[in-house]
Image 1: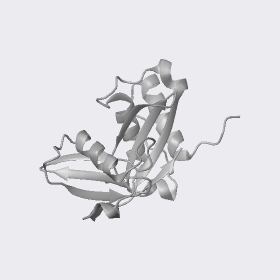
Image 2: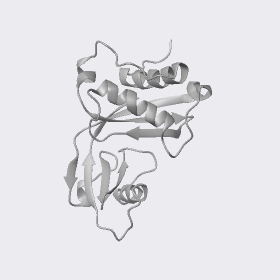
Image 3: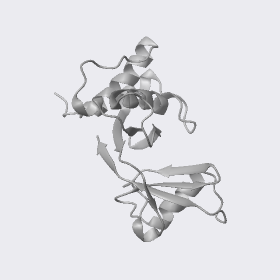
Length: 172
């Protein structure tokens, strides 16, 4: 037997496998556990041999429940992350998944309120936005976190920014 996989991770994996095999979206499981009935933003990250292969998510809920949020974002991460080509059936056995359930955003006014190990970050300026999840390998300082968010949002260093922090619950 394999190692235990959290139900959120299993749902993301099943969503991608189902779509690649059946060419249709996985139906929402029924019945749903209480936590999957709740509404929350969620990110689905897919890695292939420890390298990022897709990551898409929502900061706030867009679907009727967390189960559908995971199903939708798993497919978007697998098939529509603009940084990568769509995932193929041949890759499925090499993939690992993590799900980040997003807690509500909190506006911050100083970088002292940030910590890249604890908080994700949203940087906004003039309708542009960059988002970075917390506790990522290679992101060791608040300044690095802000720079990565600026780059992802195509926000220049001279543009004023608003910052929001958020916590996640990560499932692997």
